[in-house]
Amino acid sequence: MYPGHFSSTTPDKIAVVNSTTGVSMTYKTLDDRSNQLAQLFWAEGLRKGDHVAIFMENDIRYFQVIWAALRSGLYLTTVNRYLTAEEAAYIIDDSESQVVITSSQLKTQCDGVPAQCPRVKRWLMLDEANDEFENYDLALDALPAEKLELEPSGAFMLYSSGTTGRPKGIIRPLPDVLINENSGGLSAMQRVLWGADENTVYLSSAPIYHAAPISFSTAVTALGGTVVMMPKYEEAGALKAIQDYQITHSQWVPTMFSRMLKMDPEVRNQFDLSSHKVAVHSAAPCPLGVKQKMFDWWGPIIYEYYGGTELNGLTHVTPEEWLTKPGTVGKPILGILHICDDEGTEVATGETGLVYFEMPKQPFQYLKDDAKTKSAQHPKHSKWTALGDVGHVDEDGYLFLSDRATFMIISGGVNIYPQEIEDAMILNPKIADVAVFGVPNEDMGEEVKAVVQLVEGVAANDDLANELMAYAKDHLARYKCPRSIDFEAELPRLPTGKLYKRLLKDRYWGKEGSKIV
Image (cartoon, rainbow, N blue to C red; front, side, top):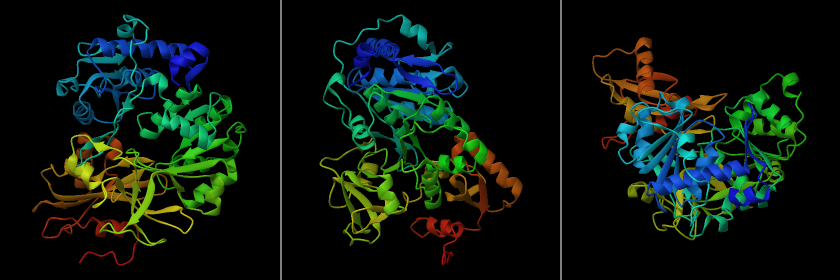
């Protein structure tokens, strides 16, 4: 289904509501506004397979843009609202987006972005307008709230890291059906695995531009349920939303669990959570102790899945299964698992190796990066793809992860790619070499650490470390910037130029034998 159906059957039902302000949007409004925006896309000459982008904070009008693209046969790219103007412009331009929607809250970040994106035909801004950005609502008001004559299904084209450190678009073929014929794979999965339906009230606690929140929230509106969107995550606010909106389903990252568990018990336990039937988590491994405490508090309602934005495979584990096999991320529900050594040979049950998923067809491509696409494929089987995660499968077929994508940092459930940070920092004239990786952080799981080799004649000290961190903040989104910098006389590189980053990283994780020789 899609909002056009529910606009007819339950026009006054709330599709999306802001958990803090209570501002809401009915299915009739969602259908009308997404139709008007679809009309704008069509008037600008956008046709099936073209691209649009949204660069915005959590706002209930986000869903108007989502459904306008999905009912127009377009690819929608969501841009992280914390990116700098330079970073956002790169993604918008690389995605070849022709219309961009942003908001007045991000107008400072948008300074200079249009000049870097010559392909964009129209820039729309919520709540304001200026010489470069039209007022979003006024632009839509001028158009009819009528369906396009033909409504092919669109899709998301989200971004991950590329071989050069720059993000890369993950593109899959568009569904070859009309939007009213497209039941949606994730909606079906939500229905089967977690009992979601038109009565679901779903708490979306994370930034909507991320893959999981946007996919799950969109699937709930495809089912005719209600999305309760938090403008920003806050522990007590999340628990209050569960109570006040009678939340039935929710999604989390482990850091959120950790922070809720650290609340004053008197505050934490004052909320009525009895409506809450299903809590799903993903994005990062959850410490066993934290997850067990969550089970003790919420009961056996916590489900987990493992997969990447590439959607090249998926595992799932129920509460009962996890309690029987603590630490597992479940069995495959999409794709066939293969655990292989560095040469691509499958290893025995219980042995650790690179995690591959086999799919009937090549599931994705990285936009404009054939080398990156090829690097994700098995050396002999192109339909087996891996994201760099390491783990093993036990005798019952359950997957256990022992390491994450090679050096990707997961901080608070957010993926941070070291290469992009290294590429920015190496341009500083005082830096001769730099290695970036994650180090332990009790609250966030990991935090960004930079180890720097200075150019000859530059002295290492605390003032210089602060100067380099400030430099990073000028060129990168704040969440990517190093929280600390250490200095080395020389980084461990082979004559070929390969950096032995593992030798550096292992020191900070307390692993024995991790000395540089």
